[in-house]
Length: 601
Image 1: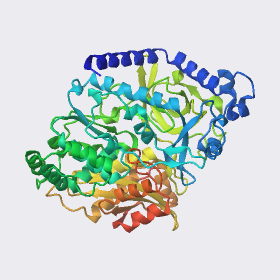
Image 2 (image 1 turned 135 degrees about the vertical axis):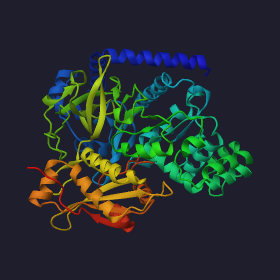
Image 3 (image 1 turned 180 degrees about the horizontal axis):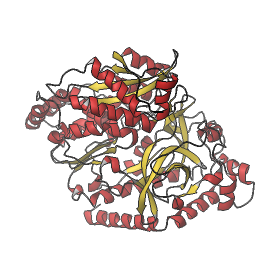
Image 4 (image 1 turned 45 degrees about the vertical axis):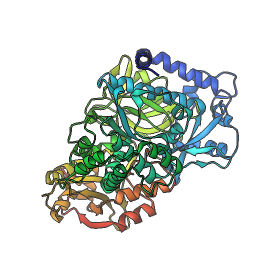
């Protein structure tokens, strides 16, 4: 496809974006009517709306309950066992998508129909026209985007069960895509589609190094995956240099498609190998390694919102703060939601414009004026939220917090996504939202209820104050509510990198104890009251783990059939015995708060 046709497609995509966001109410009402028309005779809707030949929007809003996964799971299991898709949707379910979340210890399965791929592709096709408005000339080079698939499972009746990104990469939308200079990847498709995580990472990084002078942008789906690639590079750069110098691929790459694709790229290039060896072999820390290896790159693309924001300091460190960090879209396995129309904004300012044609969106009000509250039960009850409490997309208010609820063509009705969003503005007449956190409580011992945002904010503030000032970085963290003793207490697992500066002193016991108290003093009033006054919560504990422990944790969760590398987000709270066993087997030290946190009644 030539440049003029692509430029025209980009202009048309932006025009369509303007049309959709100029009349969101009309688009949303039309989407809901189409969903009801397609799925009118499903068992699920008949249960709540009766067996009428038509189902009205007003009837839907009055009768259909707000649910969590618990409310739809029995239908999904029945379909997975061979019953007809008409239980929940009027179109055939073609696959089940494995969410990164779990239910009863198993990955959540999300139904998907063929048309869902068209909707996802529509959103993908908006990203480059949006970014190209701010960063021109991206069609003149390559993109080193690190993408991964995960081995598929299947339901008892044979439906594929795979991650949403595996679904896309294995579809004709990706494999049969026309050549597009704005999406010219360094990675061969065979490397992306390789199920072996090591071989896929190795080949993709090797391909990125071969094309290092042509790379204009870098990225992965999540910031954590990009940093995992840097860690992999640090361990294997000598092997990469050997392969490039000799033109021979490492013997550990045994996948025949990967070998064939990479041997087409590889040819002896001693000069390139010497360049990479000089850059990677320097004795100074790897600060700025990304911009030295890929000197023409203009930005890094990855999710850096929510829990991924903790990786921003590390991304800035490895890029020497020379690259913008672009977070292009907001999506989940259940539905793709929206795009970032201001891609060069600071990561803390990222907001997403929800596309009103992706699904039907409603919102549970949670608060305003900078505070959100949890006034509905979080115990997976179907009737926890009265339908009358929901707010339509066009009726949300600036500065207010909401939980997102979605209705889709594939059979989710008034389904709680679980994300807390803040309305930050409007594009035309369509609201823009900042992702705040997952709604549900992460830690609780007594009356304390610490959510993901509060935990993340207190930990990052403590790390900034006590670690970064000492030239160390918090690589990753998770938590655990330890109730094996009375009173119970919060356990925070930290992996720390204190080797980034050659003259950085070791992190002392005193510093880590101050980290403990700093985390506690960053938590809310109720927690600090329980700790200081009620004595119903014990001193917070930080357990420092050895380097690489969180990579092992990711491997464990991926092996258990959850997320792929693309989807994986380190859990902010761990409960599984296997995960806790792994973490506790890799401890290098345990530290407790030396005093009570400040609490003013």
